[in-house]
Length: 306
Image 1 (cartoon, one colour):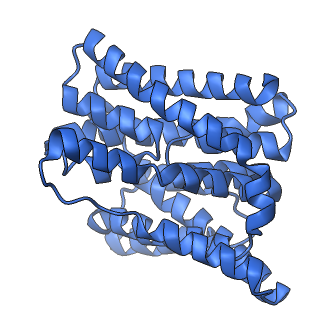
Image 2 (cartoon, rainbow, N blue to C red; image 1 turned 30 degrees about the vertical axis):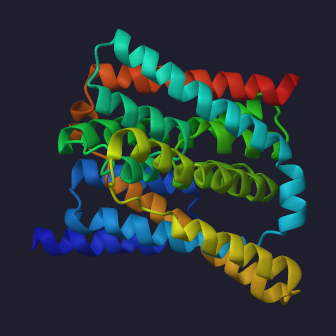
């Protein structure tokens, strides 16, 4: 009986997250609260559900973006992305050695922070043959920091009076995972969402060269997982830009994608648990927080003063 009530409430909150009355941070808090007090009724399916719903939402967002306008606004993000990736990987290698952290855990965590969180970790882990513990530690740390960023970044942006373009660029460069980037930007404003999505997915494309370099030095023939959904997002954006799609279609697809994203963040919160936070370990948390603070502050200063 209790299990049935839990399932009904879970689906009720999930459906409610699709409504316009639930914003992204609230959806994630609802998910975490549900997990904390009632436990996820379908834990084995949560990761897959997040994966597919996030990819679907990202592709849908492409139909609401004009490629020329977005790329002109996000040129600064390219330089910040290159700077952030290179220096985050170097700093992660140095701090990992100082903390005496497992090299594979350190590399996974640095890669996830530098590029796109769980996606980068998922792409890199089979190449370096990381253990389940290494992967869990890296994912747990990145997941926790993503959750914090989703909640606090919009408030910081408003406090500093960042423009929509400034916040969108900052969120895309300083937050790891695509779901948290888009969630934070969505809470800040529609223009910030457009910029953040474009810059973030351009940043995510760096998975490809990083995977190739990793395979060259560590993998020795391991299979690389390509982020195909990013190319679908680009295709949707180009279709919207050059085929003059009806505004009702573009607006409807973009709105639907935002609601699916909010529901995805409910699932993200429902997948977070105290045990996962503890599983990360203090060395991983120190490394993750250090890298996160470095990229957040340095990218914000670059946006404001350069």
